[in-house]
Length: 169
Image 1 (cartoon, helix red, strand yellow):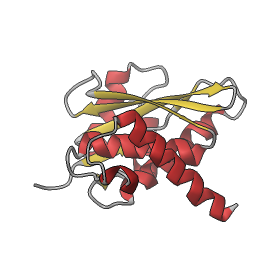
Image 2 (tube, helix red, strand yellow):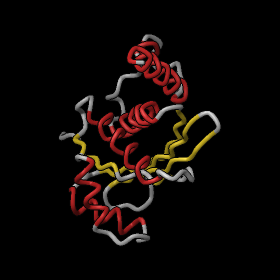
Image 3 (cartoon, rainbow, N blue to C red):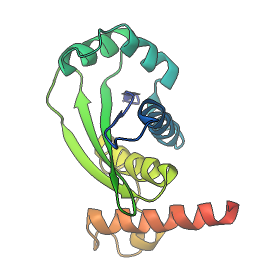
């Protein structure tokens, strides 16, 4: 079977900050990069997806935006999302749409302190949804094979991301 083609749309920033458009675009770009890293998915370049969204009138219904991006990119799946501010970080809601549907196939809520952490955690959840049974859990869980919940797996992945980022700080 060929790898699923995924398009990540710009996230809607609902934090109320002045740089809303920039932050939403940045997170979408980070999620695109994180999804492409393992190589089991074909991920559309973010600039190509963004170009397709610009051709849809502002305020258009979500279904129109999804149709336009699907036509322009030939993606099998699309990712949309929104950002919200929390006292100690950022919350991202992430919706995964299958071609031909305007109802999310899966929805996720990801919380992180930095944009890179939110993007990495969202990518883990998306890869697990798009490639069921093909994405191994983090090493700490793999030894117990299935004993932990998805929430625990995401927490361990968050710890792994934090450890990786601390090496570069």
